[in-house]
Length: 280
Length: 251
Image 1: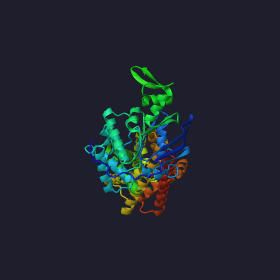
Image 2 (image 1 turned 90 degrees about the vertical axis):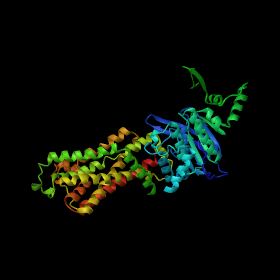
Image 3 (image 1 turned 120 degrees about the horizontal axis):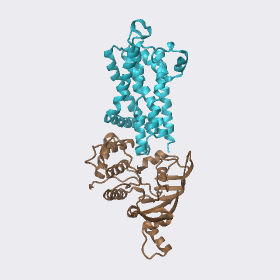
Image 4 (image 1 turned 120 degrees about the vertical axis):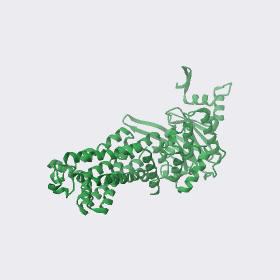
C-alpha cells in the first residue's frame, strides 16, 4: 500500500445523524406472493462512525442498504442520509454518499483509470479534475501500476479496491460498503480493512454490512444485527458481549459470534469438518 | 447533455474494444442487399420499371439494408450485462438524471449507425447506386437512419430494463424482421396485395423506408421525408419516455 493520502476530508454535517431510519419497511410483490424483506427497521448512525450491519443470509441487510442508497424504493417508514430525505430527494442523497455494493459492480471493458474518471465526471468534475482525482485515488488504493489495464484482468482484491476508489471520487459524507470483503483471501481482506480505517479517519461515516463477525469486531464502533427483517440487537461489540455474559452467567468472555448466534436463534452445526450456522 | 456525452464516450470506447460484435451488424444487412437484389433484379429491369427512377433494383433495396443495420444495436445487451454484474446499480447511485442514463448508450448507437451508414454507402456507390437528393440527401439519409437506430435500440433497452434477461432482450430484437417484411420492401406500396398494403400502412417502418427511398431515388420530396422524420422522432420520444419511466420505477 502506498503512503499517499486522500487530500481532503468530506464535508460533515454535524448535529444531524449521518443515517437515520424510522420504521423502514420493504415489501416485494411477485407472482408467488408478497415478501416482507424489511419489517420496520429503526437506525441511527452518528457522523464519523463505522457502523456494522450484520445478519444471516436473507435477513434484509442488502435490502436495507439498497433503500438507504436510493437504489430501491421504500415501502413504509422514512430515512435520511446526511440529513437528506431518501424518498423525497434521492438526488440530494446521491450527491452525499459513496456506494460499493456486494459483488464489486464494475465495467469490465474499461481500464481502472477510465472507470474512476468516468465516475468522477458523473459527479460533475471536469475532465482535468477527474483525471487528477482518479490518479489520487488509484494511488490511495495502490492500483497505479494496473490503472491502464482492462478491469477484466484484475484479481478479486484489485476489483474491490477499485470499487472502493470509485465510491470516493466525490468525497462522500457517508460510505456504504455492502460485504466489501466477501470472497477475498485473508491478505486482501486486511488491505480492505486498512482502507476502511483510513477513509474513516478522514471523517467519512462508514456503514458496513458483513457476514464476517471478526471483521465487524475489528472495524465497527457500533453494530446492529438484523434477522428476519427486524433489528434484534444493537450496541458496541464490547457492550453486546458483556450483556450476553451477564445474561447467560458465562464464565469465559463470549465472542461476537456467540452474540450473533444467541440473538438470531441459530446454533452451530458441525458436518464434514466445517462449522455452519443453522436455524434452531 | 454533458453526462450523456460522458456515458456515450464510454459506450463508443466499448464498441471499439469489441469489433467482433460490430462486424455481423454490417455483414448481415449487406448479405440481404446482395441476395434480395440477386433474386429480384431481373424481374424489375431498370429500363421498364418506372418506380426505380432510372436506377438499379439495389438502390430500391438500400433502405431495407440501412434500417436492418440500424436495428442491430448492442446497447441493450451490454445493459443486461451491467444489470447482471451490478455496474448498473453503481451508475444509478450517481446523481445523474435517469434521462441521461437512458440516453448515454443510445447516443453511441447514433454515432455507430452514422458510421455504419457511411460504410454501406461507400460499398454501394461502386455498384451504381446514387443518392438522387445529393449532399443534403446524404445528410438526411444518415440522420434518419441514426434516428431509427436510437429509437429501436431504445425499444430493446426498454425490454432489457423490464426483463433483465439477455435471452429475452435478444429475442425482442427479432421483432424487427416481421416489421421489415410488412413494408413495401420489394415493391412500392401501391403494388402490394391489399392485405399487405393495409398491414404496411399501419407499420411505422413503412414511412421511414419510404422517406429513405425517396432520398435515394427521387430527390428532396419534403412531404415524404417529413413524415419519415415525424415517425422516427415520435418513435424515439416514445421509447425514451418508456426507458425513463422504467428507470424511475426500477427496484
